[in-house]
Amino acid sequence: MIKKFIDEESGKIIESSVVNAITIDCVVFGFDKGHLKVLLIEHAEGISKGKWALPGGWIKEEESIDSAAQRLLRELTGLNNIYLEQLKAFGEPDRFPLGRVLTIGYYALIKIDDFDIKAGFTASDAQWYTINEVPDLIYDHNIILNYSLKHLRRRVKQAPIGFNLLPEKFTLLELMQLYEEILGITLDKSNFRRKILRMKLLQDLDEKQKDVSHRAAKLFSFDYDIYKSLTEKGFNFEV
Image (tube, rainbow, N blue to C red):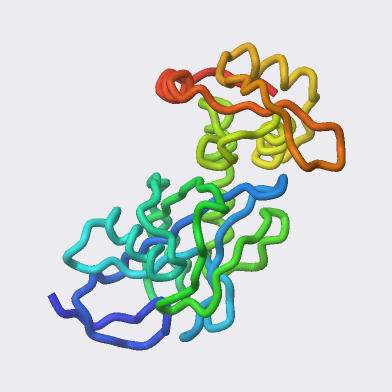
């Protein structure tokens, strides 16, 4: 059905065959050089021109919400065919200044080095921001981001984390830094090492780091079968 509505990106009244007053917003987390990061876009037009936001936009009438999330990420950032998990709907009456708009939140965990980020569509820029340097975002996007981070913190205590964030080979320190960044706390190194190794989650590769200025640390990888099993069964990782 062709409908008139206010475009969240441009603020203009347009006619299009899209689902009226429902949008998608995606929180994409990555881990790089010891820091948890989130992917943001800068709007190129409309009432939010020049401001930073989570990647998102309108759902086309002929597509599912999952397909819309994948399409919007691809058009805005160049990310293609990544695993997205649906969070919840955000629908405070005043979340969008020009009218009532509900948004469905998604989140993803990816390895930053595996993807080439390129801004497009209605985005003039796309950048990774460390969690503690995120600027004021449009509408309620800071609230959506904070909800996603809380969700990730709950998940890290109930299932293994890192398969989609760390390189194939990593050190125990890198894994601990990932947990510290997600949880926002400092962990005891020996206690963390003992708990992680007790899970039998890691494979000792009998290799060490190369071309480092400090003492080379041992390298590990995830045992995929155990990782999958613990993801399905869950555990209680107390810190």
